Amino acid sequence: AEIYAELGLKQTDIGFWCSGSSDYLAGRAFSFISAIDSIGAVPPINESHVEMDAAWALYEAYIKLLTGEIDTALVYGFGKSSAG
Image (tube, rainbow, N blue to C red; front, side, top):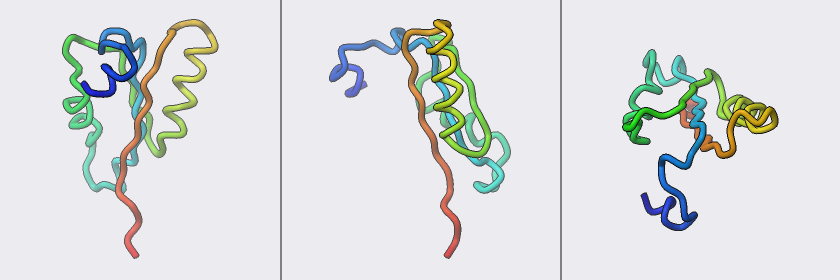
């Protein structure tokens, strides 16, 4: 909520939300679902998740921006670092 105020945006101004994570490294299938709860997917949002890395999420959002399908995107990633 704080970032929206700083940018002068509302949640509904974001045209596309995309996350990237490596759920198998986290040891939990569909762990990205808890992230969707965290970003506040109500009212329903245009959301996607890609497996492996947030770089792929950025790429997906970039392509949607290039094609004009969306005007704004929020990309985020999360994961579990390697042991050691």
